Image 1 (spheres, rainbow, N blue to C red):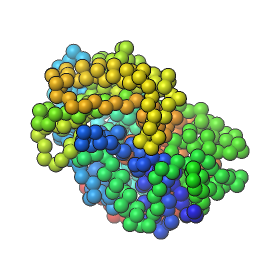
Image 2: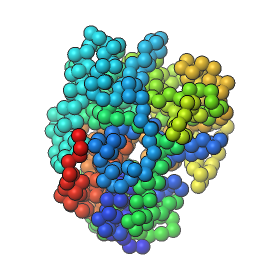
Image 3: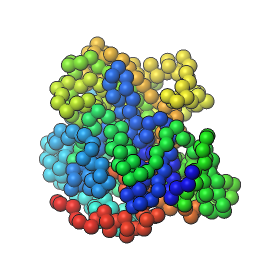
Image 4: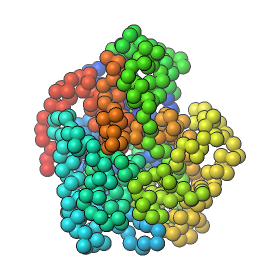
Length: 503
């Protein structure tokens, strides 16, 4: 089969790239290894409840805001159903033994107002923090809905701990300010720009998907088919065929796909393993192949009895101690995690109660290495064994006990319990160690850990979590950049920004 562009992987980055190219008249094909499209947008149903695998909430979705502008241009925004989160606390940060609920609020002035109630003596520091967020965001034109793509090394090389410690010496406030970085693999040496861009998008506005994140991928797929793109699921790419530094085709188990250009939306580490010997020996491939993936996760999803647990329109970030905000490597005390995020997902527009609760915590791939020889998806089901089930049950029990501190008696209201580990994310998402956020980016080595959309293979480009910025906003922008490599930078961004957004 021959196309103008073949896209390997249907995460948001791949869907964005494909839709842009299809809208510009390219004959596009998208290949997905799973039954469901969408990467981390995949959902699953248990006891008639829709549960999200990765999307907890989304920022800056109003039409005049960053992500809202990109998605409105793509024609998908009005086809997705969202609910705005609590304006005074879309996130709360909690510490063991501290009854305070430290809020992150929507709106820059409101953010300062709500948090300063708990740190009145640090109000100037909180104001300076918001100004610093805005300063960093202003250095990224595509985030600010302006044309431009050059970034200053001084901005890229500042770590979270460098910036935060320059603003305040109050350790608890430092932990609160960085507390929801848990959602995107933040640690002390993470570049501050990543924190700034992601958190500022939530401060602009914060939203939850109604009935699951896979409605996002469904909206994209509807638009893609409208523009004559072809999508094939259960098509995992297992071979690449080269003519020197030109990629001429990719192969799945039962088909060969030829194209003028290729976009990879799969893990760059897995992609490079498919290169032929000549291309694998290129220095940039060796450099990137030595990079470390970020953390994976263990999650617990609870289906609850109806009309009992009040719906909470915010996320709870729990830490046993403020120090655990600044890294993820020391996250376990036996089977009990030291930090978790607690959220719920609305199943309908009007609701007083929640019918589900999800909990997520960091987990190293090493903790499940005993079962790494197993592989389990809906297409290729496999029982990983009794020891694996026992391991998951022990952790789930500890996490539910921790949850009961926030929802006393929750154990009595659970219908069913469902868990996933780094092996689940590895098998479904396709990263080598189940990483949730792609390649780990470091301020101390920002040039080495920043992966660009362009590769040394002349007609192969990258989009997705590994490129520049992860998260839904980051991979959306990476999708535009990958498309721009084929269509031309001016063609893509002049059209996108031809009318300034309404402020």
